[in-house]
Image (cartoon, rainbow, N blue to C red; front, side):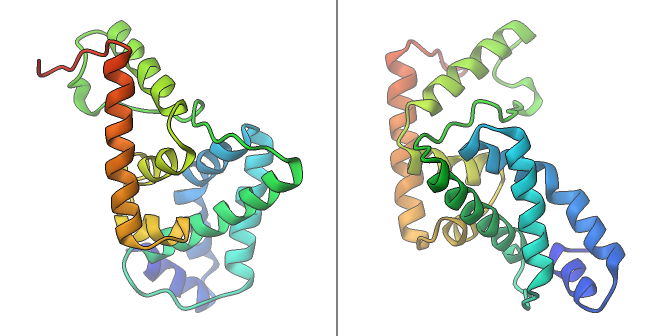
Length: 183
């Protein structure tokens, strides 16, 4: 069952569907918000508030993938509002878990961990817009359309941010001596 179908079931007074949506998306949303706040406890509070707002003001969501984009947009807006109040200006994703698919990039856990640190360090040096677009598309597996909804941009802008972000990330990694697995 898709998220949109579960949300529709919630709108039809099925509270178990709401519980399943929270269970499915709460951890990832909390980590996304934590990328803005760097305070896991505040992030958890804002994650709960995002779900509360989602469930308090129902709106029809039928297009595939739109539920998650709408939820992340609520979380992003809450984080930005909270950030403005606290006057924080850096967006870092150091605390987010990053898993390599199938261990393709490294033979041993030591090298895998080292590459992960190189990636985090390089991500921290990117412009915040590049970092956020890359995070949504590659870490959260969102489509460009969904990332555009979350970031209040159009798909073309997300395409440009992803392209420029990857180019910047590659330049940073090469400057720091990163060795690609296929070379």
